[in-house]
Image (cartoon, rainbow, N blue to C red; front, top):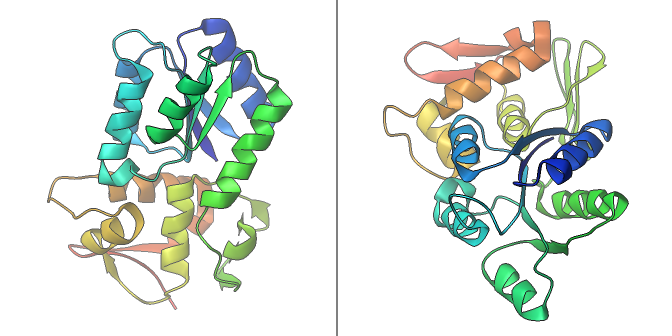
Length: 223
């Protein structure tokens, strides 16, 4: 589970990142939107924690851009801010935020609300278990194991693996994968699928070999 935290206050950013990492989640913190957008171009997280008052670019403008892009239009976003009036909350939620938490906040509450939001937004399980070599996946319970070892995947990695393993033998082109997982079409240069396949294989270790590259076409998991 990968979470991006865009927060310019070093103490808050480091504290939240520490708590998330100790709760079994992977987090990456950014003090300014420029670093955040650079990371977004490389990998899309499962959820974003977003401050409003930021250098370079207002947090509401960041949210507007996220909602304006097809690939992040439905990305879960929680606003963390000192702006606590009812009007501010309405503006934030109407602007596209999924939740709004005022500072100061308790970490237990933040973690609970993150988990609740992810439960609401995670892909629906297919109610079936899949096994391919040493690779085991139970989408409904969000379980992935490689040679008996639990594997933690980002939301997009999970959806990608679920697509392949639930359709054994089917070759999916990059265009098809982008449409099914990200909701946009392949432009001939986008490396999103290849990057996610590479990181997915790395996380799966030896079981990553179950994902086959069909040269010039795309990817599949053999029957």
